[in-house]
Amino acid sequence: MHSAPLPDAAQPSRKVTVIGAGVIGLSTAHELAAAGHQVTVIADQLPLQTVSAVAAAIWFPYHSENSAAADLLLARSLARFEELSGIKETGIDLRRGLNLEASPEEDRSWAQIVADAAEAPAEDIPRIAAAGMRATVPVITMPLYLSWLHEQALAKGVKFIQRTIGSIDELKEEADAVVLATGLRGGELTGDDGTVYPIRGQVIRLANSAGLVHWLCYDEHPQGVTYIIPRRDDIIVGGTDVANDFNSEVDPQTATDMLRRAIGLVPQLAGCEILEHKVGLRPARETIRLERVDGHAVPVIAAYGHGGAGVTLSWGTAQRVVELLET
Image (cartoon, rainbow, N blue to C red):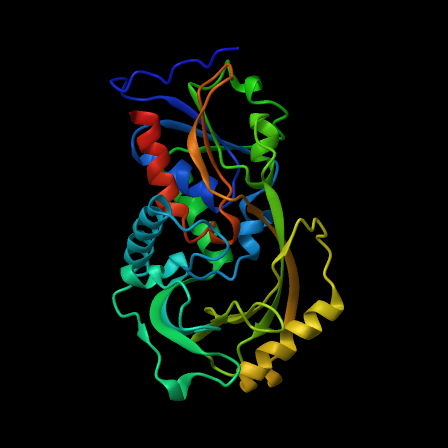
């Protein structure tokens, strides 16, 4: 079957169906509606049920591709998050923190687009690490943010339908174009991509009785990836990065190990109450798939494979989808 052509760019408004209601789907629906399109989001999970709701979440290119194209998505997303941080209801705060490194040769390309990024002084580096960068970046309280973004999309006329899509071709009579913001299901729905795999992430949500403000990340911690992200009313402690693990159940030993690593870096965490344990399956791919896809009864744009950087790349991805649709 030959792909139908994308609608004429001169057409003022198109009917676009976005499959997926996580942070990529919501951001994309918002931007498409803002550009004047008639947008419907179809998803089998509500926004607060998606893996996006489990995210810590901090603007940082974790477990995603390193390329010029991804750098553009990073920069665009950072600019939008910085802009939105001025609106309290978004749940976005600009917070300073420390990214620890196992070697001074770590990739620091992300720091080139962060205004105040600077090498941390030696006295700030724990013995378990070799170097580090201090920077002020957006920290997003995801339950607040996803709810706010959902409301903004509704206000722009986006319609939401809870439904499971078995085939893209189901939508040929109701959409001029389809956007796949489907995470792990992206390859299944396109039928031509078997490269998507899960990276299991487990986190702990703590009460912030210690009054922590600054975040700390150490992806190369010798005992496992470790991050401490203070948000509005809690602290997210993680984590795990187990590839090809579909287990969505909390592992108690993993939680114990994560908390031990975190307390080793931030001793104040020892007195914080555990509020919740969560697990999410990050949709990973060697490269982000952000392109038109041929072979379906309706024009398709893929927007999946962001790994652990879905939030970080969300606005840039959404803007690129609009460009792909309109060119």
